[in-house]
Amino acid sequence: MAMSVEERFELIKRNTEEIVTEEELRNLLKTKKNPRVYCGYEPSGPLHLGHFVTITKLMDLQKAGFQIVILLADIHALLNRKGQEEQIKKEVENWKKTIKAIGIKTEIAIGSDFEFSKEYQLDVMRLAQDSTINRGLRSMQEIARDVENATISQLWYPLMQVVDIKHLKLDVALGGLEQRKIHMIGREMKKTLNHGFIALHTPLITSLKGPGQKMSKSIPGSGISVTDSLDEIKKTIKGAYCPEKEIKENPILQILRLIIFPRFEKIEIKRQEKFGGNLNFSNYESLEKTYASGKLHPLDLKNCVTDYLWKVIEPIRKNWK
RNA sequence: CUCCCUAUAGCUCAAGGGUAGAGCAAUUGGCCGUAGCCCGAUGUAUGCAGGUUCGAGUCCUGCUAGGGAGACCA
Image 1 (cartoon, rainbow, N blue to C red):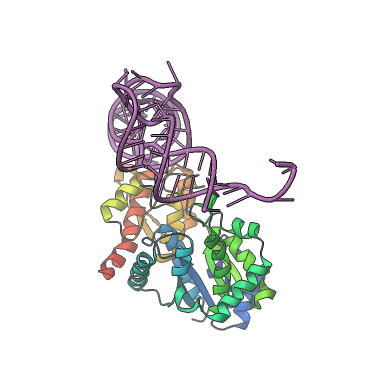
Image 2 (cartoon, rainbow, N blue to C red):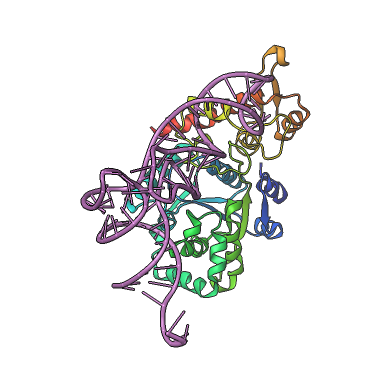
């Protein structure tokens, strides 16, 4: 039953964009029994497909023996102009409920519970002394709301994120690829903070509207969240970008790889007899190969993704109520 | 605190004091066992409060919001 270091490593590496660095991760697995990993989320708006990718990865990490920490970064949401204090407080409660509904076994940290301590703030100031404004701004390019008119608070954000990693005593920081620049500042500041960590990045899902567009709550049809009904999901998936045979920047395939396959032993694609009948796949690679060959039509694939996404989201919606 | 610039459709922008337009987005029709691409159709708007004028998006005043500037040289 016990997994070897290499098995744990492979499980963690699955579906990641990069591990900084792989060698450090192997070492960690060898030397520490239950390392700590976190992923931080700005509690603003419902949990959506993008969040699911890192949640899925956290589940892998748990299987690999990690202690999981989810940070509800309320102060960060505030600094990033995602809403007023009262509003964010409500979102924190929603997120707590959602995480509970998902059923993942995790420690939940709230930013405002520990980010005001003297030691924490001193660390932020130490970092501030060693970081240029330009570096801070660059790290926020993919994260900041209204980045052309960035505020000082948005420069404060990456510094606090790095200090979070130290104060939550984490060995590994997980995030989407957009987090990489902040994590890299953090790694370079190892000496300043007297705390090092490994950065683990998942791929970003392409917008359902197609490549080059943002997946955003404010763009209808670009994403799916846990609050969507079955009808809304059907409609959104139906309208999604999904060229025949195309496996690059195909959001429907990405959902299968990053969210659905990690949760199901095998998946079944229901298909009318005249189109060849049902298909079964036990891993993503074989499905991708079939799709690339043109033997699997996009519409059949979409129907399948809708079914399985609903299998993931329905229980969450049920538990939430 | 003082000065300057900006404010028009969901977004980016256009309209010499005289009927507020375009592109993109959205919705929709065609193509097509999905979507996209391509082709066609369809909406919605002058930040707020006053004033000048026959007539104001346009000129004037105040307000609000966003942005920029303010040693010396001058």
